Image 1 (cartoon, rainbow, N blue to C red):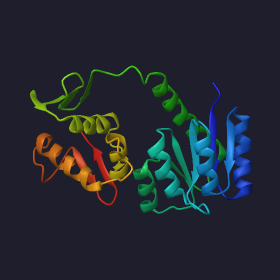
Image 2: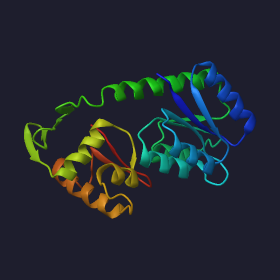
Image 3: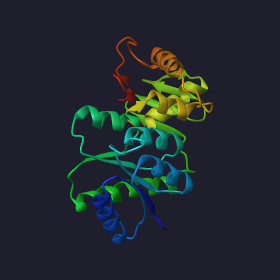
Image 4: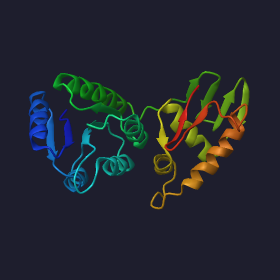
Length: 230
């Protein structure tokens, strides 16, 4: 299988060095030196993984991350000199799968890329084989009946509520931004309405939480979005 990687980095020396090592590993690599070039390449090609620097000219890495994640569910690895937790949390909240701080070793970078690709390719191979239930802690989400069982009590769900739980329970502890949730659940995602997400999250909490005013399972990550804990 030919694995193609998009690498967006404005420092030509770093870009060329990393691309050279990736090609030695057998990967096909397209190099972009600014945000606009990265967007063009992303639209024209089918990539298995994106390597993304945050501080890019023309369009920064956060904006690229947001756009790319809305379009495709492929691994996105951020490489950045930004060491503050707020930057890392924001990037992960936008949908980054990994965050590597510069300077980094080539060996570690390649190891992390391989780990992301193994996970992605495995899921891609079996994406058409969908389970009938997801069991986590005291919960069991039933795909056939659109219900969730909590401590042997069956709770009926609307289609949207079911899709929300399916997204969260398929990705436990992963933080999803409101825009990411909207684009995954609603098909008319051109005008993202964060209030729509908040309303449905509130209704869902009223059904599954012990105390919806103090959610234990469907948690708010302030300033970013929501995550599922069990």
